[in-house]
Figure 1 (tube, rainbow, N blue to C red):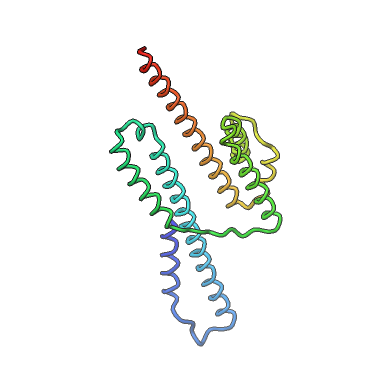
Figure 2: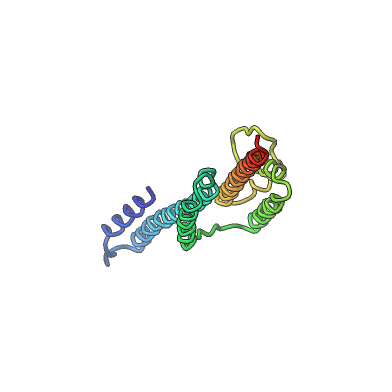
Length: 209
């Protein structure tokens, strides 16, 4: 859709051609304004495409990591697992070579709010190894502050106030980051349960049960 907007703007610009010498100053001003309006459409379409690509990059990284840490990967033989891990690492490396950056225009208040929100998330993420269950609950409370529908978990109202102050694009990025962290925590907890279950089975086998 964004690419279609760019194409339409280009066609409109080409159809207008060069300015006529017989134009009045007001006519030229109007045509310049129209040209800038068309360019604004193309600029916004460019940002939409870049943002979409940025999200696709994040999605690919999550999916590759998910496959690497999946139960299915643990259940295959060592040789196949090593080969598939090499392929996953190659894809991960190639994805990381793609760098996309869409800068968000912010005022000083929005800058401060983004810094506070990022610091709170980083602080909880740093606690994941020490208290995964507690950190997961805190992350879910932060995420609940970012959604419009009524969430089934408590809302961190302090964080909600901070997020509302952030620029709209930053609000979306904060929500996506929290969703990614929560997915990673669930996957990690699942893998821990699988490993614990495997240890119990190995111990029972060793004891002849």
